[in-house]
Length: 245
Image 1 (cartoon, rainbow, N blue to C red):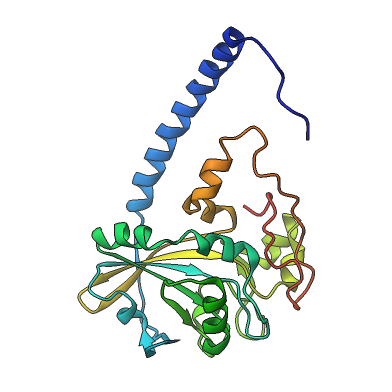
Image 2 (image 1 turned 180 degrees about the vertical axis):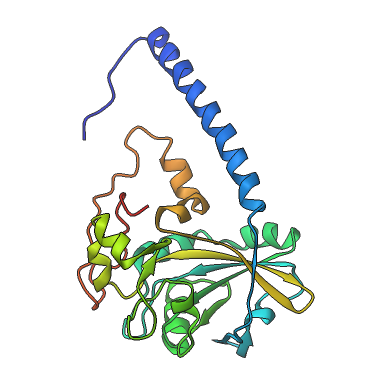
């Protein structure tokens, strides 16, 4: 990776001001996009999803607690894996109690859900030192319905709102061999009724990772060499290539 050009302070300032114009444009576009995101319609959740947690069986409604909203991190951890995805784990490392407290102050609960059995999840959570709620969707349709686990015997392959045919046409045919991919989903509760309001996948989840926000400001950037997932066994399962948008 080549280093930035060395220049005078005056030349740097001129280039920085030019970039600032584009940054302000991006800020305005992001604000407009966030407004449109809030205006999306929502879909009632009628299926009775139930998850395994440290306190026993828990419904999707119960994950809200007393809050109006719920954010779910779809964590890559298949039932036959011994450990979770490294990339998802890196994201989870940043879910500090302070972050959850800020969310809860805005009536928003947070939970992590993976397809691995609860015993594996609990062992991995203890190893990583995590304190956030981490639930197992093992044996349910939840991961397949939200298109983060793949088994064409259960549901047609779809990821990031693209069908299998669209993924192949975009050069993402390797996804047919994947079993898990990352995502985030948001839900709203109105009384005892739960609604799905938003889901994001692939690089659409990165805005929630504070490290990326910081590292994207640096000269060397993310310094990542992406590697495509290579099969159903989970090799390179933490990789999400730049073109998977």
